[in-house]
Length: 77
Image (tube, rainbow, N blue to C red; front, side, top):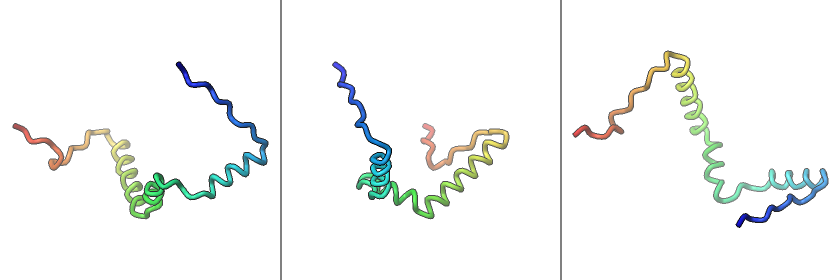
């Protein structure tokens, strides 16, 4: 049995703009606050930039596979 389809509430443009403004000015929910702090952290932004640059260098070269660090490889035996 499928759930009944709900039609979106009808809003005039002014109500819709006010609704979006309220959503944009409200603080993020508690579950998203840690993610929001992480995305605004200077260190996270710098790390993302470095990873992006490394990926760009890798993809523009001959696309050779990068070796896995030995610390994360399972032991052979």
